[in-house]
Length: 429
Image (cartoon, rainbow, N blue to C red; front, side, top):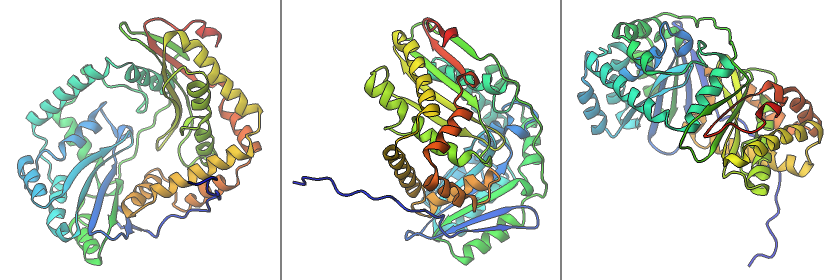
């Protein structure tokens, strides 16, 4: 039996794996991440066609959902049968800024699978009956979601941060879903899912032939065009709100403040500070409010970074009698980070945790492609990864205090609580 733990050592600098980014005359960007030992590939075709490009709310979501529901070459059933036959999967991927298709398959079947993806992007038919079905399902899911306190709180805090007309702030409703028309989808597809808005991420064990086929079959044929995002100004709502929800056992707490996009000069340092505050099991919030006080099972903080803006969010659920104390302890952690230098031992532990997390995220070409894709889609050059690593390795206790004083001011945070009764003395917190 071991009497002493193994010696620990600091992890060194991590680099992005070899990759290539090509830009074609029609504006398409192709990200290639070649490697791995398994005969697998992932093909992700992403468009800048999210909420900032909408003419009608929710139309970006609805357009994406229809891409797998039949086209002029294959019905939805025929498409599913072909995918099953070749042991492949075709899914949709989206966030508030981007829409896309992602295909997983065996490299030996790539030439058979590529035409399936091409057909989805070149000739979707947007069948009305499928649109009606999808909207019905989403309305039913929405009704279920609105019964959950954490969902209600998240919706309220994001609306408070950006305003209910902003692409990052508006929330779906049954009325919005009913307003989506087939013509809206056709227009959104034609205007925005074009070559100039497209980024293709191709990863796995790739061959020159596979890349050439992709260029010939898809890259050269996507309709040309380059739509621009619309301009929006965030209009924040009230800073504090309590949503009365009967029948709830716990009080849900959601806090957030607007932040910035990934290209901001403070992003790398904020990534580190967020981890200290609440983004791993040994974080300040977890050690204080869960381990020491026993107020909650889980509490955490998250950087919600979008292409044009961002938010810093804190979430937890506590018994009503602990809600006021929980908020006081959250603000106490803000103050500690702003006034007390972090101990070097904790700094080292967090640094190694972050580096280990990044190493895991880069394990294998398919995972690495996701990291590179996130940077490219958010307008960040991949050489900025080195800036992130340098910050992680060199950031000091004083740097973190300066950053905390800048971004951890309680008056900058919006607060939403959901539960049976309002939190006591919330206006004094």
